[in-house]
Amino acid sequence: MQKHYKAIVIGSGQGGNPMAKRLAEAGWNTCLLEQRWVGGTCVNDGCTPTKTMIASAQAASITAHAKALGIDIDGYSINLPAIVARKDKLVLKSRNGLEQKLQDTDHLDLVYGTATFTGPKTVAVTLHDGTIASYTADVVFINAGVRPAIPRIEGLDTVRYFTSTTILDLKVLPEHLLVVGSGYIGLELGQMFRRFGSRVTLIDPHDRLLLHEDTDIANTLKTILENEGMTFYAASNLRRVQPDGEGVVATIDKHGTEVTVKASHLLVATGRTPNTDTLNLAAAGVETDDKGYIKTDDALETSVPGIYALGDVKGGPAFTHVSYNDYLILFNNLLRGGHDRITGRLVPYCIFTDPPLGRVGLTEQEARNKGLPIEVATLPMSSVARANEVGRAAGLMKAIVNRETKQILGAAILGNEGGEIVTILQVAMMGGLTYEALRDGIFAHPTYAESLNNLFASIGR
Image: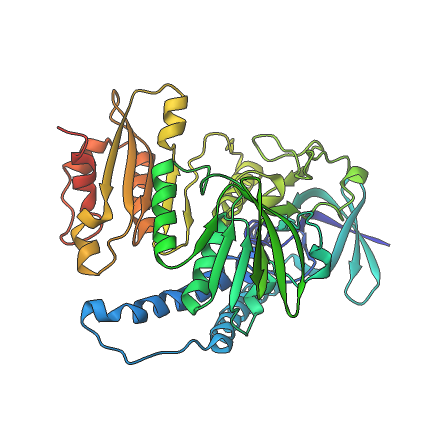
């Protein structure tokens, strides 16, 4: 027996949840399929748990440096089980709240199980009790997400290693954490454990951090992290690992020379891979690229009419806010007759190191590669009054503007509250404000926003 729905949503991440709920509220008989927990990566393994634990690491750093602010603290200790328990409490609260809202929504069935396509718009679901149900739909939305990618490293299957998911449940502080990969995840978690008291070593296959960012921004962040005691092996690759008691011995190829590093714990943070391998997309006729990401057009429709993909599973920037915006585009187009597209949308993001890096628009290098007539505004955070007053003066502010139109093309704010400051610049870009409007605008003193006066004054009047 098959049950038919107007819509099936596969995956209850930050695009799938609101998609299913809004469709049901609009009167569509909808089924939301979830393999594990509602909320997706963001709630369960990503944003909520990591930023909760990073907040504890920031508190430890503030405590350790309180003497510079005239506060003498005799000593403090890290209670990792308590930090993990606080994280788990917040995650569970968010997850349960989402689940309850979904279950209370009319015309919406929340079904837990593993989905596999058996034909176009036909899905078999292996339920948690082992039985199999079959569902069909007029429209299908795939929001299956991604998971940590595990690279091929000699000996990796012989040692205990952690991913960005499993390390969040660790309740014993690593003596020495070796991080393979120095992307956003590796940097955030590496700094977090360093502030908890672990020795931290990161292996980066490239000659510098964050290849998508300008060199001055990347180098400034690296200096900040090195000043906190983190060790980087640049232009290096992990060749093999082997057990060393409860820890590991890693052999690293550094500029053609083999180096051996012993560590108590190993974190593999080498990227993500899409959860499409179990969906049997071929049975539905849905095409993927060579990495397994679902191909879509700029309206998020796959190679099969009436089947859409949203969020990380379709490739591109893997951010929660992108997944949510995908949902908004689809809902507006399908239920309101809109013509929204993902092409050309302005996508901000933030790396939650401390200080964080807020980013939007073009980098300087990207603008130069396009041959645009640009001016570059920079301001060290040490020149920002508010940053000095609160004792958080590390970092660099940077903005790219079009010399002819005066429009802001992009910005990178590496500094305290960087994600909030860059949002002001994003709103200015969305509204078409010139950099001169911010340069000459009145902002409250002393705030971080006020620093935009001086940032753009560096270009000249």
